[in-house]
Length: 203
Image (cartoon, rainbow, N blue to C red):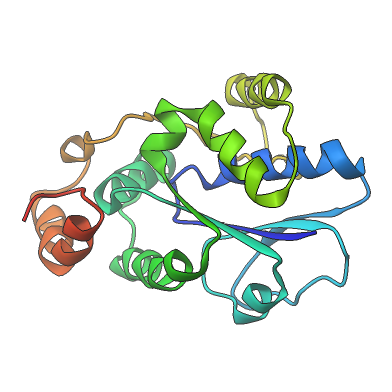
């Protein structure tokens, strides 16, 4: 089973990747490939794999048996990037996230809003399991995810793909604390259509 775990930056994409990784591990043991792909990455020949990605990679899209995708209010994405890195994301990074959404949201087997991950993680895990035909051990998965959340990392974890300072303020709608007014104005003007379409903003 080849699974592409796609998502916007800072949208619960690492959570999604680890849910999928743990489900496949439940079925296959350690006999599968896992990791991260970029736009230039070549596909793996493995029959069983879970690959995380943020950008469009047409080879991996064709390769995948299942595609899952997460997204979040793009203003919260930008704010979360600032909290994690201390730097304002380049506008091109915001553009890339929206461009990837325009592809993955149309083809994914399940599109998951970040707020669902926060409010009903067990239901999301169950929904994923139904799609790929695995009855997940939800209690085990939640336990592992909580352990990951509370771990103190000194470097990037090659298994979970968690980074130092990976989890920041997980709330939604607090972007005004972090985004400069002109930067926020740019996002809301350029991507109002997207914010409205995904119910992150009223018309």
